[in-house]
Length: 168
Image (cartoon, one colour):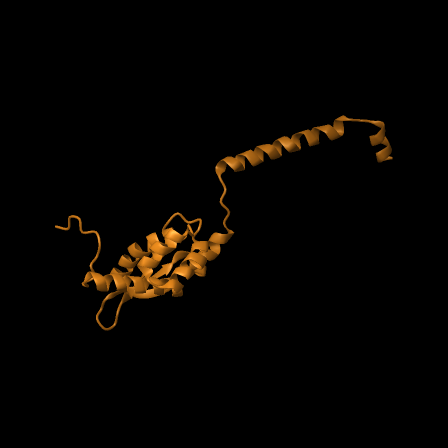
C-alpha cells in the first residue's frame, strides 16, 4: 500500500534527488524548457511550482527561501525578475508537460517541460482575446439605446427660426 507516500523517489537517495531537482529547476528557469523523462518532469513540476509562486512577491524572505531550494543566485535573480513579471497575474499552473515519445536507447518515456508564459506559439492568440463579462455588455447596449432614442426624437419635432434659416 502507498499510504502517505506523496513524492516519487526516482530511484535515488534523498541528497541526490534534491540536488538533481534543484539543477533541473535552474536549467528550466534559464532555458524556459527542458527535455527529460516523464517521471522527472512530474517531480520537477511539484518542485518548481511553489518556488514560482513565492517569486511573485519580491521580498528578502522569499528570495532566501527560494535560494535555499535552488542554490544558484543567477537562477534566483532571473526567477524574480523575468519569470515573476510574466506570471504575475496567473493564479497557478506555471509549467506544461508535453510527452514526446520514447527514448531510442532505453525506451524511456520522454517529455518536454516548459514555462507556460514563455511559449509564444500557444500565447499568440491569447493576447488578442479580450476578457468581457456578460453584465457589462448588456449595460453598454442599454446605454447606447437610451443615448440614441432622445437624439432621434428631438430633431424633427422642433421647428424654430434658427432651423428655418439654416435650411434656406
